[in-house]
Length: 360
Image 1: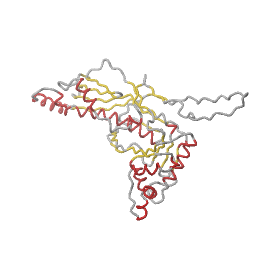
Image 2: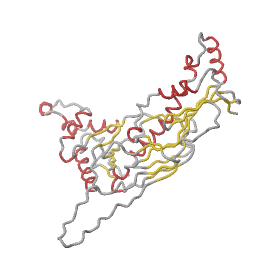
Image 3: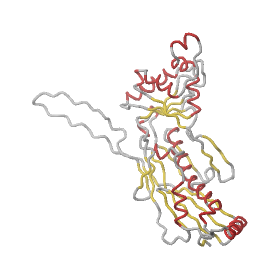
Image 4: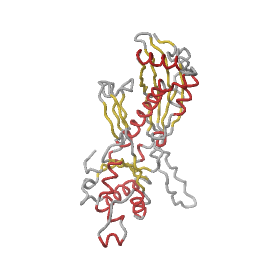
């Protein structure tokens, strides 16, 4: 049976202050997919992502009829917003420790004993953000595809697949594996990808990669030589370039139209329902995504009203944090929940490149 919080002296205001103080800067999904509340628990993409931007006018004689240009078809992907949930508990023995500390405190105030409850609030809040980060970065690096089920994912309460059905001609591969430092033609592969994008009226400004792929790029003999100064090349002392140096070199390539690398550096640990863990960057290795903007969509959410909830309940944008007691087994539960999903609005306006030379 659910009861009020078992943390003596703990108030809703204390938990809300803790939730508001959690640092969300390590997470990138809210920058790539800004958070937006919707009316209801369904998501949808912005329509008309493939509409041509610059359609030329026709030349007419004075007495001819102007040809009406077709409007782009207004279509969107849509679906149910999934439910994300994560929890932790203070056991009976841990509650005993808090009770003793509270009794011995000079000023009995749960805020002064935050070590007994604050970490669980942080854990659950960050757990929700981590799952949204995982979804966002997997979607982008896998060309709009994602598969979840309740066996391989412990924080989703339901199974769902996402597939934006990106056109196959937006998925490309490099001429060689960029891990082959001696033979990789990175500049040539980028030129082909940018050229293919522009033929589709796409104008990519950014190339998204993870740190592992960036390491292969800046370790390439071609890139090292292209980034080195004339003097360094002449005396053979060229060194591995920095991101700034690589981007400066790319900006000098007229056929790349100012393309700049943007490195996605992230590490997410996920616990599965069978108790196993996995850690790593959700943005896949050997992937490069050419995009026109760093705002790739939106994180859409709504919040379920729970007027009868017993316990402490707080909200911060898309995330709900709850704290409550349980009679059997006697414990204090902290729960993080969200009805939210990153929606990949620009899925059809990107070019997806496998940099290992393999097909999709």
